[in-house]
Amino acid sequence: MQASHFLTSHQFSCTPHGLDTTHHRLSPPPSTVRFRPPPRRSITVAVAAPSPPLLKHQKTHSMPSEKIEIFKSLENWATQNVLPLLKPVDQCWQPQSFLPDPSLPFADFTDQVKALRDRTDELPDEYFVVLVGDMITEDALPTYQTMINTLDGVRDETGASLNPWATWTRAWTAEENRHGDLLRTFLYLSGRVDMLMVEKTVQYLIGAGMDPGTENNPYLGFVYTSFQERATFVSHGNTARLAKEGGDPVLARICGTIASDERRHENAYSKIVEKLLEVDPTGAMVAIGDMMRKKITMPAHLMHDGQDPHLFEHFSAVAQRLGVYTADDYADISGVLDRTVEIGEAGGINGRGKTCTGFCVRASSPGLESCRSELMRKLKR
Ligand SMILES: [Fe+2]
Ligand SMILES: [Fe+2]
Image (cartoon, rainbow, N blue to C red; front, side):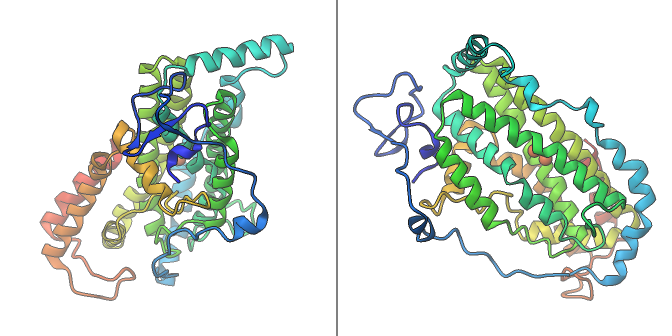
């Protein structure tokens, strides 16, 4: 199955050579194969479906326990510098502000739904493949909150902890929760995608989890989240641009609004990484190097629809082709992080040292210092 399977049967076409990007939903060529909605499957069939890709070796609790004190000592700093980057709920947008109003008389509501559908008419099918991929990624939010709560020293110990790290994580999750809700409802109303398939994929993805290689280590975890927030900012920003170019200003505003949340979140996580570079340069640089050597995995890398073990790669290929999230975007941030590692290696790697993540870096190396400055500039951008 291809990522295109998410599109409704009367709307999408493919050729023996792959996705046909030239046809919009109102004009599928008669000579091509059309996807059909999936048949209803029994639980037995779903259980027997192929497994998602195998996970690599999973390492746990790699941060030395004494470093937990660093995060304890940063609690006041986090209260003053990170929590203000959250928005009070009464100042936040909500999905309903962008969607047809169900409290209107039925005819008015359906008029709004029709207008929504009319606006999406000119958007190509591949655009919806990417939007679905983004929506599924957002909808697997329980996995991301779980991931952050695996991190030693910053997890929410009770579920309602007043610790600023925990407070941030819960409120960040609550802000993020609107992204999947809004995109999901929009896609449902658009009629452009096969919602049954989408929902099944979300269920598979949450069940599969994710393996970002953060090892319960908050240094690694915050490097990962700052990278990921940047990636989602770029991706939603580009779907906004394409929606605008494709004639749907409301969808452009939806994606742009989500992108601005991601930007604010990126600022928060980058601020934390920057602070770690200040209070523990070696530990922070080692963490950055470690994440980059592993090649940062995308949060939905275990995306699976029960049939296609390469579903995420197919989605990524379409995102790359449309310029929504490309190898250049990845290289933009990872390049500077990679160079940090190279300079660190040239300037004083000490083989597999005592540090938790496998190698030692001399933070005093002049090259390393200049790279650290570049990295901090990049994070601040
Ligand atoms: Fe998001
Ligand atoms: Fe985000």
